[in-house]
Image (cartoon, rainbow over all chains, first blue to last red; front, side, top):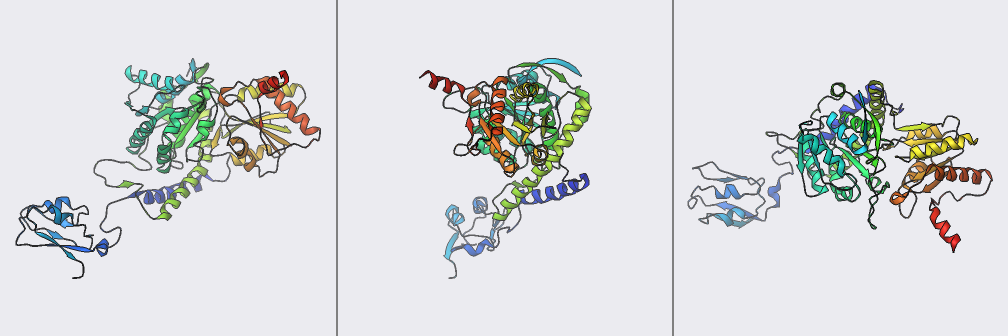
Length: 104
Length: 399
């Protein structure tokens, strides 16, 4: 018999361990859990409101979910997390999103 | 409680039925096939209300039960030899996620050459993965250990997957009288699974094992290591409780001792051939030798404290290995040497690979020869294991 443990200590340790294990094994979606990824950006997408037709295709395609849009409204970009991949600019059917070199 | 003649494979299927397993997925491979055939039969007859998911490979079989177990179901799979190697990657996913999956491994040697007979090389290749690994000696123990595996794996102090290893053909295809516990009593003893360590379900958003900082990996391993330590206690507790409740005759604990109390020389083994070694011990005792046997019921977690206690007054140990680590020693031999901290000399015999039959006469001759050699005072090369291949000696004598 393993006499290393008293049953009560065993229960206590197991419960603490299980909490610790679950906390590290599972991850839940949250805003900016990897830091401000917007600082990685080399090109900054810029929406030209006069050309935009509010279709939402940029919102649909954005791989980082940083474009906010509701139907019949203009979209906006969260520059804290936009990495500047340029996909929105590429898919825009009316060429309403320009890529500007960051800092210019 | 009823008594019935069952082969090892059907004893496993019976245990799966008694445990009310909900999801089964497996890919057939000799000598495991009869287990999953029997389970499919039980489901078809309506005796077991479970989902049987057919797949194209063992990797997928374990992936399916991984998912089902993460979804909160009680699951089962079984395999052998090459099939176990094919699911190797998923074994680590299951253990590192601490899902209480239970799997039967019907031991079989690994090719080439093609061979369907037993040795322990296949199951011991997953020794370090974080699975609890038990070895049955007879068909009764196959049934008992499988049922106990669910209770142990799902215990919140443990939450680790379990493998029950049984020797291919010797146990899987051989009939023995088996005591089968009453289903109602089993239901009371083994309630439905709780959703631990976590449950994947609709409407809850989380990722399992996402990319993270390096220290997260190390910390998770540490939790598994501690759970394995607690499993020693839990295995003792569960198997003792089972023995009291169902009285099937199987021993409890991490290891079984046979005539070791005053033994000066102790043999150590795992699996079905332990029965033959017990025969040999009886023969040698009648001849006046002070010998005994330790049979490991579990190799993971390793019964370190129990083994040390049992061998503390022995002069020398002789370990029978049915698996070898190429470039070093027999695997059980290595384990025993490390457990005794080299305080007691350990002779390592490698035998029975590829299912080569080793009888109780062989065992008594080997143990007797070892004791005479030891007591004659001749120097023994302890670090080199001895390969027991009597047919080779005969061939060289003929030449």
